[in-house]
Image (cartoon, rainbow, N blue to C red):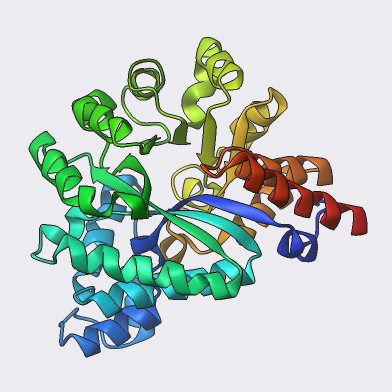
Length: 338
């Protein structure tokens, strides 16, 4: 198919990114640089060797590559460099607001302190204001870790809660339903944090997990979650309650050739607040503009559909109504000129 949308139009369109794992932005060049800095033997010595190691065809094989790569992240400066490198790319993609996932347990479990991780990330966020990028942090619980580990992680986060806008849930979903972490979500909400959760595509018990997250745990967004189209009642729920859905076409395409595009468009047509994001761009071959264009090109999106996806990204974000209005006005101004 061909689309009326050009890469140049997508490039200039103001947008928010709400589904971005900072550890998933570890490009081969930075991985090698940090390995050298910290004297970590990663078994690879060239960029091409690192790229060849990024091979996977499902969630489990991806995670088997993803987590070992994090061993190069050792010092506060490493986390700063990782985050600021992404935030530069976000600015280049005209991302005006971003809510960044980070996985503290992936680091504290290898004896890197919570303080080291969040201090580096927060410092990068502060400096990125000079790039005209507004950023926040979402702390994710690793669902294949224990409830006790999640409890301890939330306690460690409390001194830094002003730096954390919300909590999320990621990693291997198999046999790890959202309800496993219901208590931690209640405690996070009581501390003033927003709530989201991964419900990955085509997982075992996918609809039940989506229902748990929505109806019992009260999440404000679902990350991925396009399997929701299998249950019209739940689709009505997210539309009526304005629950955001954060879809990632390029990462979807690693396990489904149609990148869940039909489901994205079905949800968009029903008025769901679905938006486009890049997930783990260093691993899935593209940042947010690449994801927009891949979807637009493969499914022949109209300009109005692309604009609505961008509007949804701000409307589903966790910023004030006043900020949302300013960013939506930026979209209107951009569209009026094009």
